[in-house]
Length: 459
Image (cartoon, rainbow, N blue to C red):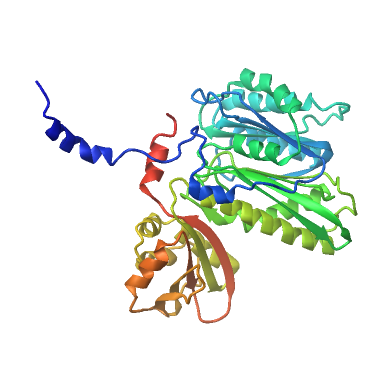
């Protein structure tokens, strides 16, 4: 039977509007709106070298690098914070055991594959993660065996429940080692190699000083990946931070743990906590100076401030790249009885699907924000007749009050719509009129594209 072109055209028109236009993994193109977050230069720590190479861990990836290596030219201090998901991936288990066994000393490298998470893969998955670390260790000359085993942090990210093509990976680790370099292009390529559904590589670097060595310039650099399955503790998120400041292993761990609480553990994209989350921090002391070994020292306090600020900016890039996201939302909860209460309320708002879909629809539906505030678990300081909610614009204009001390305001819907048109927005929730504790969380909206991306993830 012949088809009527006009009828066929009318029939297909609705489906033409459903074409999927997101930047899928493997396309390699950075959306124009995201290019401003990709650095064109950097100031990288001394004594660290990085590289990336193509393995083809995921069969559909035929040309993009998916193996990354970050190495210190000398043994360094190492620390890490891991997911709290009970189904912890093999590389999480192997790396945690390695750092514990070595006491955070003598670390040489971080090796990462993308495309396969090596999670829920049984004893074989553990063996594969161990092999990745051991193969990486082989390529560091002159390292005596101290009887403590591997010196390499191992990370994996990608699809859960599948075994790594381990022989392919092991065969390319020598290539990654032979192409190590320290310039900006090397760092940026390495940051790209750890990505999965990310639409841009997330890389930062900066310089700082310490009180005991005011004339010495130290450097810190970091890369992270993550765009979905993002929620503490932590997310489907990998992070690697390196500094040439001298820091002993014990304070290194406490510095990282404190920094993560107010950065990577204060973001949420979709409320899901992954099996693979790892943020590692390496310090090789290549810039010289007095080692930070005392947690009560001025140097420790200065380093904590530097690291927390740096980790926060790095974590924000993850939210900027939330799967299908169109908005970057800061949630500030103030005047709480405790920091814990404030953070729990902020976290609850951040993961509310109704709040996130309203933001995507540019709907000033403050009732959803209030609803999430009210069901935050374990919070004692929410008092309905003292609670206020506002939108705070990013252009510096006055806040738009939506609820004041439990009483609804006559909302200017036109101004609300104008505020919600912007990419960035702050939601301010005051739990009381009395001064109290504050917590800040960062999240994004939920769009149609989030469903599309995750519906297609394995294919």
